[in-house]
Length: 177
Image (cartoon, rainbow, N blue to C red; front, top):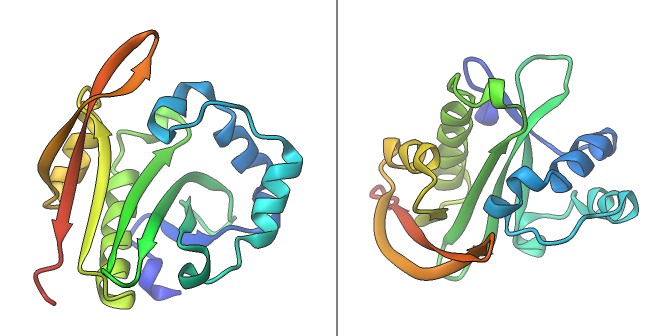
């Protein structure tokens, strides 16, 4: 699919052989705060999820894509459209790169750029939004690089280590519609 292929990475649908990767990502407590996860996932639940991952975004109301670097197929991250709302033509965006060594080499930028183009040109979305903890400077820099604007702060939104933290909401309007 040329739409989801960039210069250095491509985005693809999840496959059954992504079981161990998705299982590891969902159970990595270091990213639970950005993924709103509170409990571990079993391989059984991840397998069921992957079996249903072929559902159309209009049916599932979400789309999760694997971020891949080369043709040998293994995923290095995930990028999601969630809370897909076809009536109002909007969706939330989430992205996570598994390895710290891959986080600062523009993989996230290229993946987000591909997803924005796909969302606006193929899904005809009017807007995308992202919920980002105010202390997550790298994510804020990534999303603002592509024109996402901070439109508000949700006070004391995230409880982490017995302390409440604010979360910002960022929005990108498709000006071409």
